[in-house]
Length: 127
Length: 256
Picture 1 (tube, rainbow over the protein chains, first blue to last red):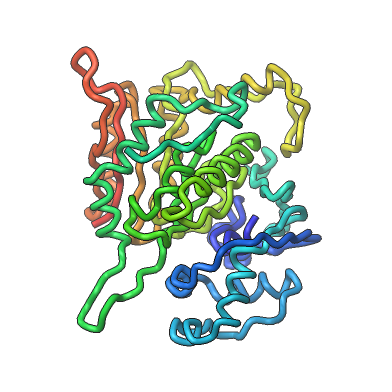
Picture 2: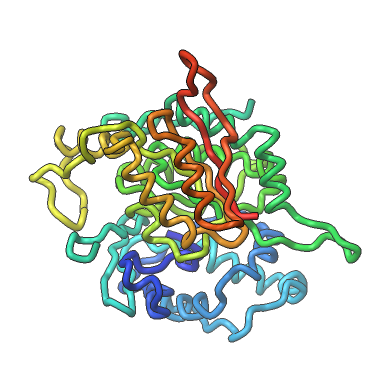
């Protein structure tokens, strides 16, 4: 699963949805692979305002990427800095979590990721 | 007519095979009227200072099965949305469907190199449960809409927590029945999805949901309008009349 997807996901437990700790989920024992995907600069630039940058910063650090700046770059900065654009593309679009877990900091539930697919089905006592 | 994604790799013993309902969704989503609605809502705008960037819409199909619908939306993003800057994803309870959807989306994007959007992932889950509240801009749902005595029950041999089981006939039948058996009025699963829409959709979000005549579509639309003054629900696609009544229809749900 792509790193960008984590920006759109939270714990599946109903009681966790209102807790700020249920987002983002925290990768654990993640095995990463890198895809080769063509850069779409316009998509990345337009995407900036809808990315939760704080959550992305957390995810990037937990996956072992170099720390992101605390503030998201502006569209103008990204447009002018090809290296920055490529780094962001690499992190968001090309990096895939193939195996591992996603952990909710609110309830502690661990969601397995196998063959790149995260399983959010809950055991019956958590539904 | 935009080409339909190739689903020749899909195992139809345990995944719903694209049928009339799937094709009605494809026809509706690529119709001139819906493309106009979606472009107006999510397309780039121009003002005095030039084109103003609009964040790309996040499009999620619930229960993609073979992936033919979300694969189609992703492959033809620039035709439907007027831009390739579209993010797509899917959630299915069936892990085989998640894998099939990934492959369908990959192939369809490769076949439409100049028009496809950015396909992200298929997640295994129950309806919208994995999604962050308020994140979905376009939700598409072809539900299990056939009225049945009850919702499918998991065979006793299955264990909780998923995992890769040896395929058995019982398990395959169970997975397949989840794709069509809708319980009372065929609405038990659709009702849960509709109840979750206010929390799931972004402020600019909309949803396309397929209904059959036995689902009592007029009542469903009235119920959605009852969410509040801004809520709209209209029929935007139909399979035509059969013996005097419309068999299948697509309703669009949105806020003004």
